[in-house]
Image 1 (cartoon, rainbow, N blue to C red):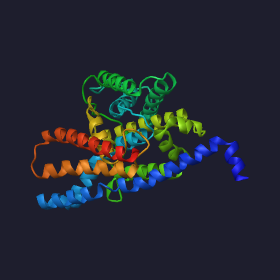
Image 2: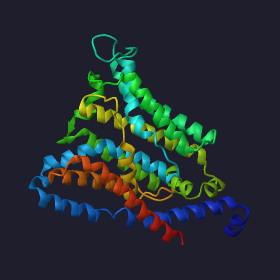
Image 3: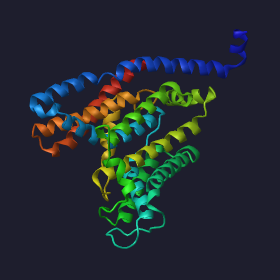
Image 4: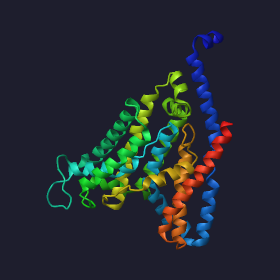
Length: 346
């Protein structure tokens, strides 16, 4: 009976082989996702040598707090890259989504920022997430339905959204935010910032989805070989579209946390973040070619970058060197990724 099934149902055979390849890739990925743990431990030792204040609770919580917004963008980017796609517009979504939400909520008088005041203040967070979902849906339509180049589409979207953000904010910071919009960025739960707990939960959900959910595991098959996945009966376009929407919603939520943390929305909020995002994602073991990587590995990439910056700050290194360091890390990570992927392919 099993032999007959294999012959008469080739799609099932392809699906089985795809799942087996994905499972094998996940087994190998367990070692890649742990590769930065020694680096993090070394950074911790260096930080303690540089300054005893490094291992204090306040400093470590501060590092984690500063990593929250970036880590959500990295989570979004990891999911999108694993599916074999790329979204540069996440950098703008973290800024424009909060601006649009606040623009629709804040009144027109009594503030430097001129809003429409059409909706009650409690709708600010749902509106922000909705804006993120719309951006992701539009990206998906242009890429998947119109078959436009994903890199160019999201680059154009990044530029367009950045211009919209500056125009709506009138080029200035928005400082009078609704109280509901700032709560998550300022609140503390069980002795730690709420943003940290939220990120832990979201990363746990992302990791569980990739490991256990059918659609989550399908991302590896899609990123590895989209045509084979489509032959196996996987609805490639629908799943990728959902991933693009999810990524943009995560970026919008990162904008909520960032705005609440600092109590304002800058006209340039998110500008230049995409370089740090890709640096953290790539050094965390997520392949730019798709089909490889893990959420945990991406998280270790974020922590590594933030610890490097923290150690440099404690050592008195001028922050102007941070951009150079991020660029160098990207190049080194790409070289390592290239040789690693070449060995696996051969």
